[in-house]
Amino acid sequence: MDLELTDKVAVVTGASKGIGLAVTRALVDEGAHVIAGARSTDSLEGLEGVTAVPVDLAAADGPALLVAKALEEHGRVDVLVNNVGGVRLRTEGFLGTSDDEFQWAMDMNFFAALRTTRAAIVPMLDQGAGAIINVASVNAFFQPDAGTIDYGAAKAALVNLTKTLAQEFGPRGIRVNAISPGPVGTDLWLGEHRRLRDRALHDARGGGHARLGTPGQRDRLQLRDRRRADQDDVSVDYSGIVLYR
Figure 1: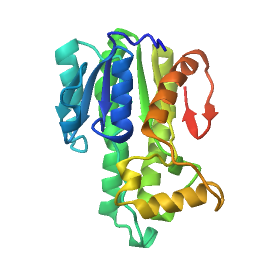
Figure 2: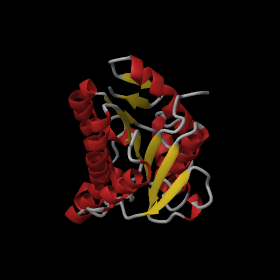
Figure 3: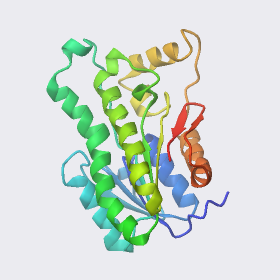
C-alpha cells in the first residue's frame, strides 16, 4: 500500500508502546521519517527511520521540545499523531474523583495534544499543508463510564477540539481528524486495568461478547482512512472509528 508518505516527516506522541508504537512502525513502513516522543524510548532504539525523543509530554514545555526536534532535524512537520494518553480507574465514581485527578486526565489526554498541535500547526501553515490525527476514545461520546469519568471528559474535549481545528484550518490545507478506538489489546487494557477492560468488553455488546482489537489493526485503519479524509468533507463513522474533517 502506497500512501505517498515517502520522506514525509511525522511526529508521534506516546510512541513507545501500544497504538503509538504500531503507528510509528506503520509510518516507517510507508517511508516516513518519524520523530517519536515518549517518557521511555527503549523500545524505539534501533528502529530505522525513527528518531526517539525522551520527553515528558504532560509537562507544559514537553510538546514544543518534541516538535522542535523534528524541525531541527528535518525542517518541516507533515504529519502529527497525538496518541499520548492515560487512564486510571476511578472506583468511587464522580464523588470520589478529585480536581487533581481530573487535572491529571486533562493534562495527559487533552493538553498534551493541544500543546503539540499548537507547536506543529505553525510550520504546517507555513508549508501550506499538513495532517493531524488525534487518538480519542469511544468513552468520549458512545460509552461514558463512571469508572473513567475524567478520562471520558478529557477525550470528549479532544474530539471537540478536533472538529474546531478542522473547521478553522481545513481551508488552509491542514487536515485534522480523530479516531475513537474501543478496547485495544495494549498494556493499558491487559495490565493493571484488566477490570476496566473486562467491563468495557461486557458493556460494548450489551452484556454479550465483544472482540479486543489490536494496535496493528488501529494503525492500518487510521492510515487507510487518510485517503478518504482527503477526499470527503463529511464525518465518517466506521466500526467505532470516527474521522472528522
